[in-house]
Image (tube, rainbow, N blue to C red; front, side, top):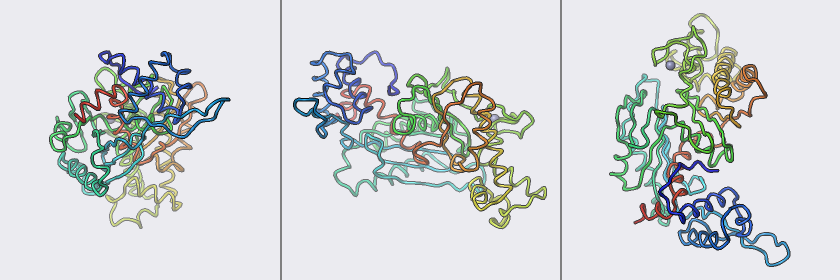
Length: 413
Ligand SMILES: [Zn+2]
């Protein structure tokens, strides 16, 4: 099942089309006969919905299937390149803007990296996000046939996001409060725009196009500059009462641990995020531990999580030890989530997950220690750094798949 929101105001015809479009997406290629075996609708209804979807260019006939005696059946598949979507991931350390087709394949991408060595609050403005969008659109214009296929923009933004009102309520790392990002983007570019929290869209990206496909209960943890998680529950993003669900970065894993940005002590973020890892290394070097990192920087403030990972790869004991400790804490945090949600699969993204070789062994050990039964598989996200940007496009795809005709007539006129 795809993560579609409940919607009761769709017509019966739209519901049928949505159901068939989802079935076709799940199979890659499927014959009309196989479709009627899977979907509890009469063949003439299925056939009408298939024709509608073909007319909308959302599906197309592919190769011929295997014959079971008579004529070889025509297989139907998603018409992946008929429409394009822009996805933007506004993370704490970078903005990634991509243009994808409706199968989540990247056609264009634009990266903007943020330099944190200058201090904690970065000058990321909503204008910078617009600029990144402009850049990726400009790249796209090199290919004339693509320019009129875009049907919307999805945005995953760091911080607390009100999806319904299209605003970022609070983004601590950027110093944003009440930014109506959706309106800003729609006014400038004229495309329908949907925004949500960056970690939730990361979970959506893995659920639609990554390792999480077909998992009805999936947890996706982002461990990078901050730590958060996106939860897919019964095929939908689980948001909680006030849309705050999944904030594992502020669950306590070390009661006497360091002070957190939130004011409390020992939150997961203070012992396993990128900045926490850097700080742990810095503190121990100051206390006299030896490390090759001292030869890699001019001064200690330049130590970042990424650099610790590099040093670990070069055999630095201190770096390896700190990454292993971070993995242990991350495992404790993830085990808490597993014990509450009982997911089928846990995926880990963000910068810390890229230090897989040094983090995952202690992470898995901690999870095994703290869960009652054999824990679910835990692996890095499939789509790496681009998971969030691809996931942002899913915000648009969800609406397209839910009510294809009304969505397309809304965005195309
Ligand atoms: Zn905290």
